[in-house]
Length: 211
Image (cartoon, rainbow, N blue to C red):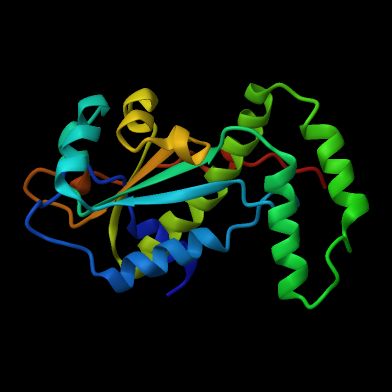
């Protein structure tokens, strides 16, 4: 199947069957797609937290716009970005990269020095605005991979970040939540949007071409 066909299949599920689970194999594939997402300077300044524990989902649901989705889906994927850039974080990524490529550490020193001169002189909130944007690339690829696997999903920003951050103690990881992805098996009897025609703006309204 083509990617376009997969994307035409998917929709943002509005209700999940709490008795059904997504296989670990498929969860791993979705996470792998997110892991290979391109990011600015290859820094991958975020993590994906996988919440399957029902008690945790119940706690997270207290801050959700659609709490039933949070409680009843198979897994909640939390895309959480670095709260700020640090010299140690930048060096860790590039040390790992050079080690994996059998290159001497410091091989990209002039570039990482440039990154540090930019990011370390910015306020933490400006850093986070940048790291947060990177998570959406990973979210998009995760949604596409789920569609290819015919795994139901819902991207979500409708939640209280403070609740998620506190429940998962993200401050201890130097992270802040940005977006969520519910993964599970749709409940056809309650997923009211599933029978509706999928609508997108026509190409002539969506694309602006300069030829």
